Image 1 (cartoon, helix red, strand yellow):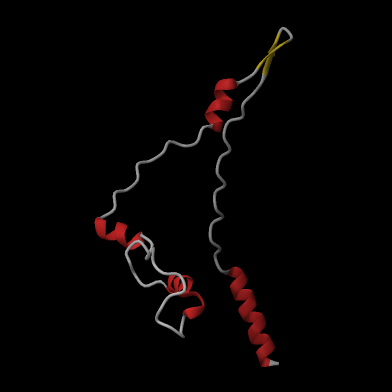
Image 2 (tube, rainbow, N blue to C red):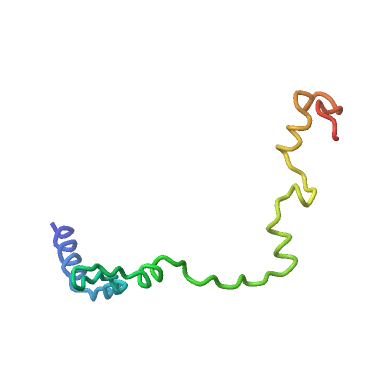
Length: 104
């Protein structure tokens, strides 16, 4: 019984706790409006073109030579690659030192 009262009091206290402010919703972009003048429809080509163009490309941040090398695949750096070894050795892997497919 005491546990039930304690949990009820705890739930009531949690309900009184201040809440985080709601996230602001982004303002929608201005709508492209078609206008009709004397029965002739004028399309908002400039507005549509502006909305369809991708944002301006930013310049890539230059990376150091060490970071560039760390991002390269291991086979370019002549590191050991289990799948490459399996491909080269074929059915001779684990049974012979002579590969099934010799290096070209």
